[in-house]
Amino acid sequence: MYIVIFFLFTFKLESRKKKIFTVTKFYLIRLEMKVHQFEERKKNGNTALVQMARQQPSTSDEI
Image 1 (cartoon, rainbow, N blue to C red):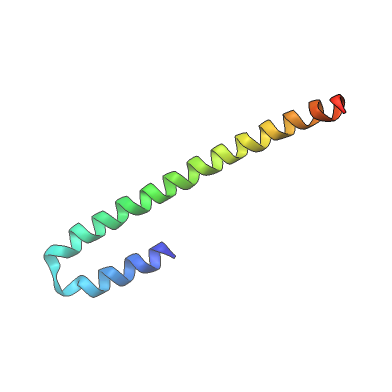
Image 2 (tube, helix red, strand yellow):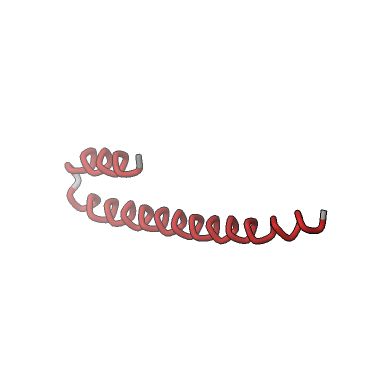
């Protein structure tokens, strides 16, 4: 999704050669940040799932 938007912007701004580099750099940095956030969320989500799996048997033993 983001890659398609990124390409559309680059094609629109091809007439202005000066701006294209700054815009592409900006979008690449944003894309990197999005990927990093997704990886962090995935890692945190996995640890949360593991914690829940560890907690579940203890609660079932108490009941």
